Image (tube, rainbow, N blue to C red; front, top):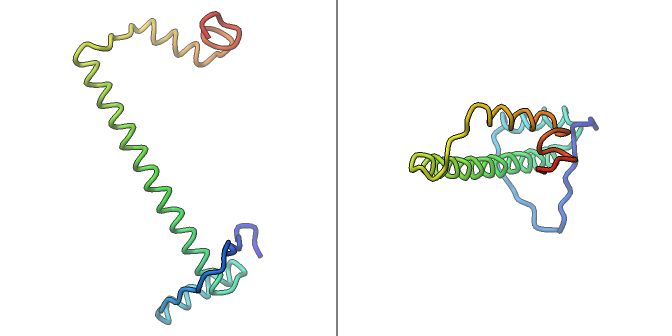
Amino acid sequence: MGSAARVVKAKTKVPPVSVAVTNEQREDFASEAHRRGLGISTTIRNLAVERTTQLRDERQRERARRWQTERMLTLADRIESGQVGEASQEEIDRMLGEAGNPAEGRGAGSANG
């Protein structure tokens, strides 16, 4: 079995799921199973788990993107209404310099941090 292949074992015994596939799909699964060094059923199960994990991760990223966008829009509204002041170029340069060198400014041993 290759290093990329990972056998997923069911945590509890549940009835198996039966899925009808075309001959072409079965051949594709058989090829992938051979490539992974697994049986066809194990490969189909692993592919399903991999894909559902990808879908879950995509949904999580989309939720995070929406949350970040909402935060950014709220901040933009606050800036436009004057609730948040502007930073000078010197303040920005100082903050970026401190972020790039933790030993100075806000970093360890600093009176600010």
